[in-house]
Image (cartoon, rainbow, N blue to C red):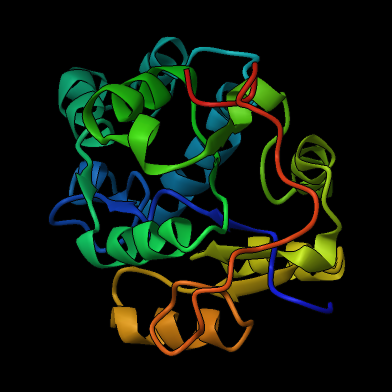
Length: 229
């Protein structure tokens, strides 16, 4: 890539937001201690949730059957509360705002079911935080499918090598890099200074230590069906 990046894609869970008191951004905190084979439950949960992440099912409608199979049907309300329990990560959000203020568009790139995305829109400030939001349930495809990233690149009208992805999932980062994107793995468990250095290594404007030079070249279209609404 030559020149400064034309856009930065930011993951949500684990990067811009986290589950309070949880060791990871998954259902583990909600069911830990309730099932004997926790890893087995989580593997089944990931498979069961996938259609909801691509907009082909409702996760609150699918979840009762999953919990019943594991003998914890009575924990539905508890699990949903934890699923919707989200708090912002202040450090990464402040860095995003600095990058955006310097002229580089910042977009949300997240796997979410419709119901959780609605809570995020309403309570987590994403309407004002990012330029556009690419929700997997709206796109009909979810990370780590390469088509997820290709759909975003097509929508933005920029080359893969002009886009930086920040994601806490190593699988997502690997796929993005395979497409030529400048992807960095980072989570809220790390100091935000680590993320600052990684973005600075790509010359992202607005990052402390990088000149505030406004990006040039193709700019994204106004938010449409795949933008924040």
